[in-house]
Amino acid sequence: MTEISAPGTDAPLDAATGVFVDHRELLFGVVYNMLGSVADTEDVLQETWLSWTARGGGAPLDGVDNPRAYLVRVAVNHALRRRAVINRRQETYVGPWLPEPLVDAEDAETAETPALRSESVSLAMLVVLESLTPLERAVFVLGEVFGYPHAEIAEIIDRSPAAVRQLAHRARGHVHARRPRYEAHPRVRREATERFVRAALGGDIAELMEVLAPDVTAWTDAGGKRRRAGLRPVHGRDKVTRLLTAGRGGPDHPVWRYRRVNGDDAAVLFDGDAPFAVLVLDLTPEGDRVRGIYVVANPDKLAHLPGAAA
Image 1 (cartoon, rainbow, N blue to C red):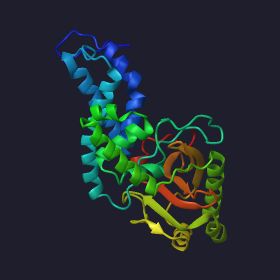
Image 2: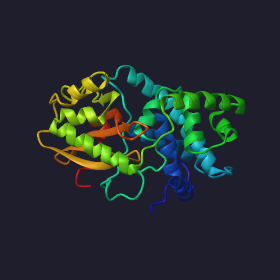
Image 3: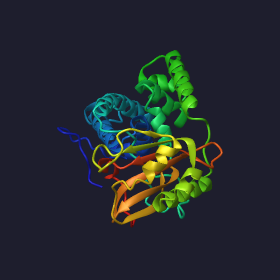
Image 4: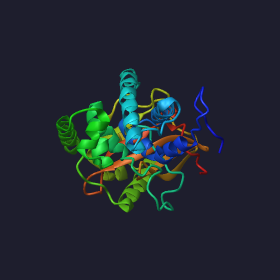
């Protein structure tokens, strides 16, 4: 390993680099769940690394009793500032905005491990988290996803424990009202995804009407960069069925691969070897109908995905 030194000093940063690398997956998970953007998460991690290496004149470990807590605090505060940038970007975004998906390279049928980032929440949950304030989202992610106690969260975001409890209460109430505590069994989700893809590809209206819940909603996030992509969510089984059977623009020779997306069984549409769209379904509590369809087709949000042969 090449020795890294801080500018203007001879102090080696090998030890500090090792500490940062050891915590990088944790930092990625926290920040990604706060932002819903892989690109912005990587930028925040770079900012966190720069803050870390600049500390103590190039000796980041000096005086830091708990590097993990220190790095999480720095990353969360960088993420809170980045959240404001993302919010401004979303104000001028074309069409529905969905999070950037995390996709495993392995086929779901052979994958025995969870998603690439084991602490990432589902795409549907990330959509719900978008409705929280930045601080509520930070508190929810740290507390509900990563198990931080309120006292530690208070230190991370520089708020009192009482304020954190209030933020946590509001966030939990809002999330649970929109997202019941239910997760479909992986086998059920896989079967529902395969059935949906077969019906959509074959234009089987009767099958689609059977698999879709009456109050189903479809979101297509193309960022204005795909032909004939919807500019707003489509509600209701009849309208969603018409949308799926209307022959909207797509690859001439579509290839579907089943993958795990944010830990859930889902599907990826490829144009040759290049990802064209990611499809994630949200099921009813009974697991027999589709109540939400999330399609991420913005090429900028798919640039980090593995190819069809991966």
